[in-house]
Length: 195
Image (cartoon, rainbow, N blue to C red; front, side, top):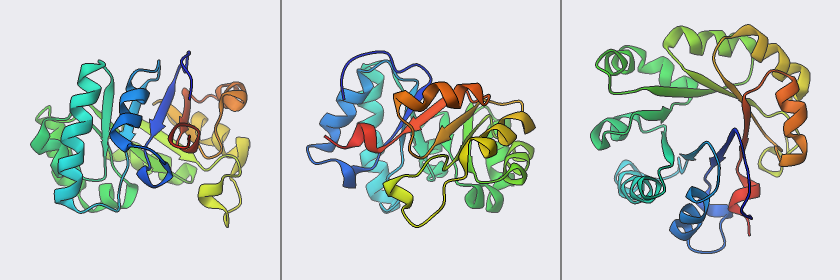
């Protein structure tokens, strides 16, 4: 990971890919010219996630970088974090409570991951303000699954009026093709987490 412009890139964390100190990696990421950081770490318990989220939010605040909490929307409420990424099945099960939090002004930026145009439309109906569509290219994180490709990305982008970010095998060399499909940008996990 080197200094430079990473316009319209969301970094997605995975501490299992990180060989060094995870919080040091977050500090490095927060210093880059990226859009935001999603603290994904979905294998943690609620208590563990809250403890880690507190530390990551502090690091991001020092760098004036947006931290998007993942899955644990109630923790986001507790910590006063207005940016949340909610898996579609979690959104579906909690849509009334989450929409109440939106109405109360607790959440400003709400994203979800989609794997079809139908998913995208459903997510928008729940109040999502951005989408992550994937996986677009072959990736080690999804070795057994065929990538959905650029036509899929184009279809999702043309079906909604909110920003769409591509995920899955995204790197700086592929950003132009992603943008040409109508995406706002891309999400990178391995490229940022691995040494």
